[in-house]
Length: 324
Image 1 (cartoon, helix red, strand yellow):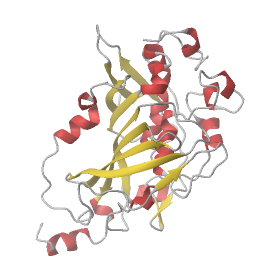
Image 2 (spheres, helix red, strand yellow; image 1 turned 180 degrees about the horizontal axis):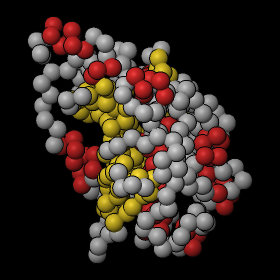
Image 3 (cartoon, helix red, strand yellow; image 1 turned 90 degrees about the horizontal axis):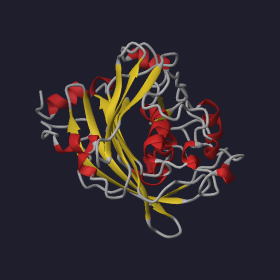
Image 4 (cartoon, one colour; image 1 turned 135 degrees about the vertical axis):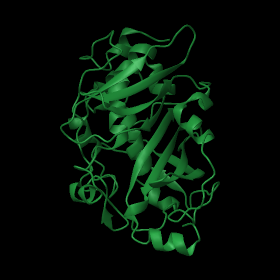
């Protein structure tokens, strides 16, 4: 493992030996998010209508709190072949404090267990993390959850989608510092860097040259924004209007980091469809391809869950389909 001094200076203000991060107050930056012509669960009123006390903070925002811990364990390799795989357990609203934890590896282990809690111990997420291109992907949290999915009894919202369905059109994306990422993500990278819980000079224009790669890298949590900003083009939308949320997510760097201002091509595929008592889920794998070399740079698996009761026609259509 790389534990060089240059790795640790990615987060100069973070305690070098810590495997438990400090309490942080992540910021809510999706209050104005819209899709399918309506506001999302991150809007306070929409959240209130669904029985929540306020619009929750997006799950991958918490990934930043693990970055310094992963750098301490794995050095620069975290930014090149790091994988974080998490099941989201409880929502966090702005003003609440969250702390990240990592169980150090034993012996030759390369996969570590991670979790995050609120100040009062309420679980926020749990999962796994690793480095290495041969990091036994099937041992991570999200693939293990997919492997345990039971056959659904019948879908209503997602009944027009199929496992194996590919993205409807080619997508080429990039993320600049001041680039607006669309209605799904109504903020820029520069705005995020002013609020990110774990700032690093390697993310910034000023500190780009100091990174081991000589240019600015995209923070792990913002890889989710990069890949999610054009998801509408894939044609994976279920019936609506309905309100969704992230229930679980895995981001794996294969040939990283991902760089600010660099073009990438995306390939998307639905790898599972499932349901619970309250939600219907569409599990999508997004492969990130270097625009110049065509090599695989990264991939993300996202469990996008839609709340059944947020779809007004759910009960009626379920009856028509003979499901209730």
